Amino acid sequence: MAVPYRFSLFRFLLCSVLTLPSLASAHDLEIHGSNTVGATLAPSLVQGYLEQLTNGKVARQSTSRENEQILVARQQGKKLSVRVAAHGSSTGFRTLAVDQADIWASSRPARASEVQQVSHIADLTGLSSEHVIAIDGLAILVHQSNPISQMSIETLRKVFSGQIRNWSEIGGSNNPIRLYARDDRSGTWDTFKTLVLDKTAPLHDSALRYESNDQLSDDVSRDPYSIGFAGLASVRNSKLLAISDGDAPALKPNQLTVASEDYPLSRRLFMYTLGEQAPDLAKGLIEYALSAEGQGRVAASGFISQNPIAVKPELDDSVPETFKRLTQSYQRLTVNFRFSEGRTKLDNKAHRDLLRVKHYLQQHKRSADDLLLIGFADAQSDELRAQMISELRALSVRRALNHAGVPYVSYTGYGHYMPVGGSGNQRNGRVEVWIKSR
Image (cartoon, rainbow, N blue to C red; front, side):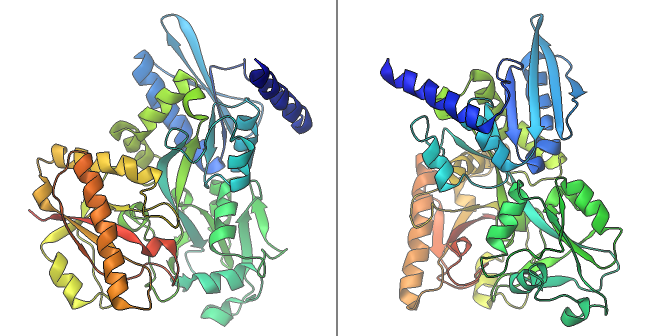
């Protein structure tokens, strides 16, 4: 009995340090964290789940605090209450760690320090704790009148760090650049800082900071000399820029580029739970969010669903003729299989994607014979080595699909050609899924 006692004492002390009020008994389910997830997506998923669970109506109630709401339903005469508090990804982890939230909504992966902090309770990197509920593109926004249509990540870094201060320096009008950024509690900010800025190029002090994606986008749409970043669901009336990374072509975020995570500023949206210790209501909501119906609500909320669809991509002049011939009778599914960093092991999202591909084939009355897996490697010094790595990645996915009940899928490798990121970018090591056109 000593271990549970120490565990409870740990939580009590941590709670005292953070001076967070006790909320655990106020509601049947507590979801805390990202504004990107919590503003629209999480409430929509909760509503769908409660409607399915209770076969009744769900009421929404506002609270005295901004960016919070409560959803209420009745099951067999008993009130079910779910609180969604969207004050930033970091706040979600803190409340989960002290048992004041059942689900942590996050627009960034758990940090190593966070994983370690709760490692005695659960493994946040495990399949039962880490749940990718949607894919989002970090939207780079300017005013509709701005003549610039694309920008590299390197230029973006110089703009937001203040090294470039006037639009005329990058092909725009002779006017000062005004910066709009999310606040430092936001997972959107963490993602931008990780993917765009670095220690040598911090955010310039002149940037206006926002807790809300929508408010930031609305202000950008009213300021002709502005540039800002927000979640893809918050583009609203602003203009969206195409973004390039390294020598890869500039891409705008859309259904294919974001769902496949080829877009340089794509990111995963997460819900984290404490593994098997999560309450049944939390587990049920997670399963609903990952289901085809839940992913439909993801799309309706303005994010990118993980339900695969077939798309005929536009292949520009940068695509080799050999690849065009290889895929000429195929469409591409909006899913890429990716691997844990530095490993050949499929990541947590990929395990779900195996089942989604299987479901797609069943739903559209297609077979494994219609699929083609194409593996890619990051840049290698030796072309033969790159080809071998790309084929091994495709073979790894083929075996996993076989284990999931989709046997003997055709596969090939395309070496280190057609990168989607700069040299060394993990996104280059991927397996694309193609399906024969009808």
